[in-house]
Image (cartoon, rainbow, N blue to C red; front, side):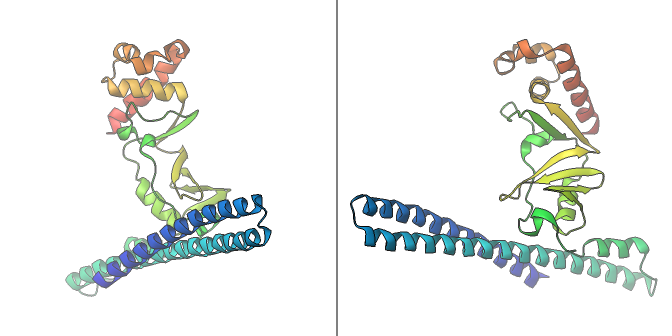
Length: 260
């Protein structure tokens, strides 16, 4: 198992190095393009063309480096999946040794099968999914958390890591565009970052900008609306907030407290 972990770490390091190389080449292209523009401006057309050609080549190389990084990320996912399969097999083998020749249970077989990677569809085929931003988690919302026009929160108790693992290994249902469904929840995957965000479903709550802001106030002030409304960071929005705004935020606050 240690050799697999070393391989996974090595692949991840190489992928990061490839991305850094792509970034360096891209930065070089910017400088080359700037030089080409200056040469063209002073009438050195032949040199400007050669410099521009070098810039085009740099752009091509940066694309190759990025593609290599993506391929390495995909390889790392496969290595991680293999590690999970081996760990499950080892646990299963240990259980068998204790029970003699008792047949493997259906649930264990299902657990092993669930970790086998399937063909990837949609953006995750080329963009490995990463984590979900803190602003989406009820327990991690702070006053500084940015409020967007639409905000989907993850209530306590939702295993988003398992959901993302299912997306990574092809076990989520690809819907369309960048959307995936797993365990009665829908997620989106941003490209090219791979950031995952909750959309709708079981254990998710959707709020607008003012409702999310009100919830931030309640969380910061122990559920007190009066104190939240006096907070300078909330007060500037107060004239747009209605009792319905606060009722919605209160309902989410209560749900989060009950599930925490």
